[in-house]
Length: 267
Image 1 (cartoon, rainbow, N blue to C red):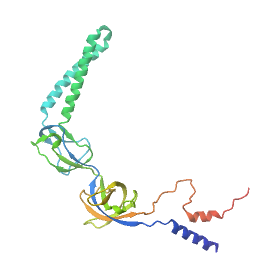
Image 2 (tube, one colour; image 1 turned 60 degrees about the vertical axis):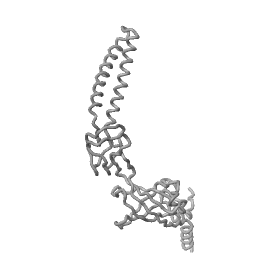
Image 3 (cartoon, rainbow, N blue to C red; image 1 turned 90 degrees about the horizontal axis):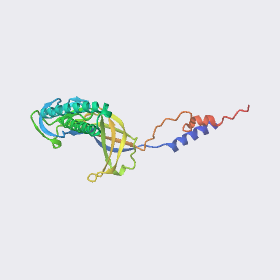
Image 4 (cartoon, rainbow, N blue to C red; image 1 turned 180 degrees about the vertical axis):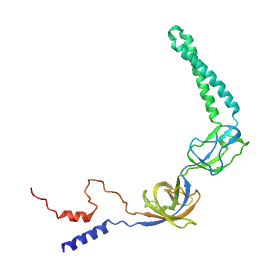
């Protein structure tokens, strides 16, 4: 009789704590987490291109170089002047007690000016070289050797990262039900097999034209940007968390039932 009562309590406890998922329909597109149209900060003529469509590049890799022979010559000239002025200043600084203050200040001023000039020409030379801002793959190439470049107004490459995301859209009336941590079960059009991911971002605004809400979830890196599909968000599903160590397992009613009838022993 007591055992039956315990199982009844356990059953009722389970019903009271149950939380049922609601399926919310959503469509999605696959996008790269980083997706950039690359441009260069100066004008000029393209001299070399080191990549093509589908080239994988690392952050800092050279993608393109403008004809910069004039900048290279200017940089080398000012570099030699800077190194000479630096050596002069260091010699005078070592003999500061034997040199009048005006001469010392003049040497220091000349050295500092040439140091600033050298940094400026180095910067201008570096701007004639386009480098990858992050690891990724060249998705589009919009330039050829010999083409003129008009500064940042000219798009040269499209670079996408290896990391992908799903951008979900669903009816805004469900926005309050969807939470970070909810599961999204989906299928890619033309592939068919179901997959699941966890929602990690929910946009705080609603698209005025479509009245759709938007969320994001990390996607497998094998998916290509531009793929699309649909699926269901499992809203209000139970959140599974691990019980911290050394704490009473109050969430396990079966263990608690076994413990509640234990009487303390007298020593």
